[in-house]
Image (cartoon, rainbow, N blue to C red; front, side, top):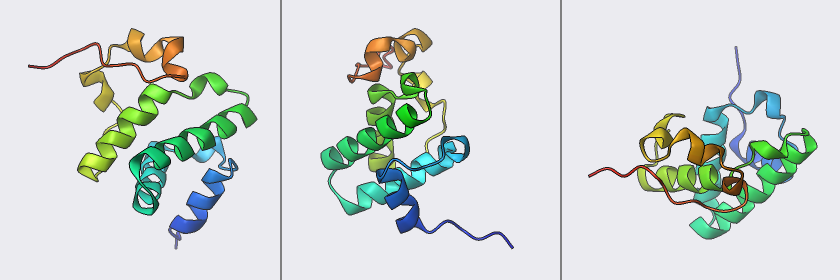
Length: 116
């Protein structure tokens, strides 16, 4: 029988920057975000989440995988909807070039695709 992850432990390990990136799935990203948003306000959660991702990606040797733009966009979607957004959800608002822009790693970039 497979046991479910302990959400408090998983969140504490993440915040310490000790999450194993090879097992950090999209669903785990969302679980962590939901747990963090339940513990604190949005802006504090966003800062804590980004700081943890910076530590995890640096430790793994892939700091370029961190994206403030993606982090804030997904945290916003999770906060508003509470569910699990599909990994390609951002494609609705962002072009691949915008999400790949190096500036998106350290700053929030506004969407470049608009609906309406």
